[in-house]
Length: 490
Image (tube, rainbow, N blue to C red; front, side, top):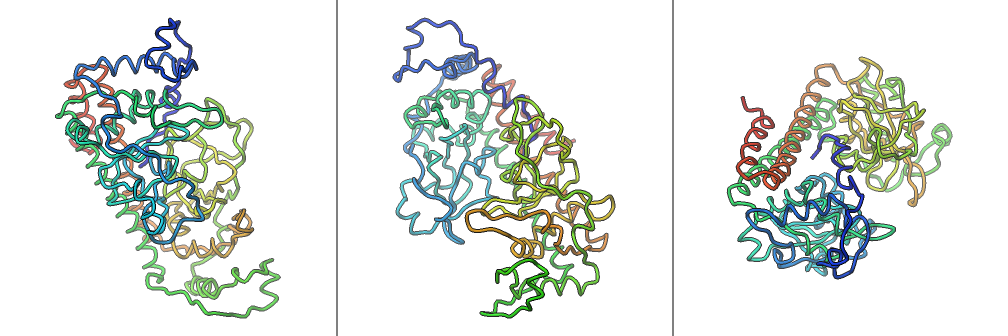
């Protein structure tokens, strides 16, 4: 899901870190570790704790709500991932309150069976335990989770008082995030211990309010599914028009190439000259509508290491370019543009230039606000009227584009790169205008559905905040209006 970038809201987590004057007895109360750090006693944290504990419906702490509250699998890295198997959740999958399945890793069944104690099922909740607070409802039939998360399952008591969606909406709200953040500690990297996580207070929301929040989540998931369908439709339209829908690339055991081909490419590795690449190139040229990507661009440039700052433009790195979209939300850090010439604009196409498992991943930039690319992202800016940027992104993510990504990769397993000079040599099929527009409509529909889903999930969080700050009646009235706007009701 994609949420509008809101730097002020993110900064608000730690806003006003000046510490109130506290008596020693106040410092020691419910403070078994005797923490005296400013983050723990910051005014926003203390105010949030006071508000939740004074909730008119009463409150609980997280611990008693769960029958299981354990760390994810320890010591699993990218080398353990497999092509098929059990979905494996990482922090990047906990973006919006529901599992983001666009970049799921998979682990073998054998590892999953060995680590069954951290298995999660649909309706369970997974929390972040490293770096920053986050919570998501599991929307997969089954999965497992990494050591940077906490796998939980509601206890019989927890199920009797909370819907998982309502609990997640609270934990991702401003108040919930602050109270989770309050329990994070560490020097090099912040983390949430299991004992500290259990202490977080939770308001006992009314059942009617929770039912409305659950409905928000379910509708958001429906929009998310609509987005995936529309995105897939655009990809099928391209392959069908290009004549590659049923293409099976050749995979011979050996092949021969001329020395002049190797010198022209500046490559000696066999992978660069696979017969599948040669056949694809011949197919593209035979259409009479192919050309080198560089002839369609005004900009083909890698970003730079950002000068991070508290204020400025959002920074886009490789983890923000996923599933055909560029994500801007509270997780984007900000940086000062300074004298940098390269700023991302509406209509640019972004491609990941490095990163195991993400290299070559591409998305159009459809946000009104500008942004800055880091040194892992290449900005492709089409010439006006030369090619539709959304179509170009779909093409580069298709089999035709990703085959060329594989062809032009450089480097060892430790550091694989896709350089702008090589991207410039990609062959692009310039589809007829009506094909480009049909694909654009499908992708625009997907983007709009994702935005609606994000709006509903944000509305669920805000509803919890209003219930705590004002009343459940005020929260329900606000949610009804917010839903009508998000769903396009008259």
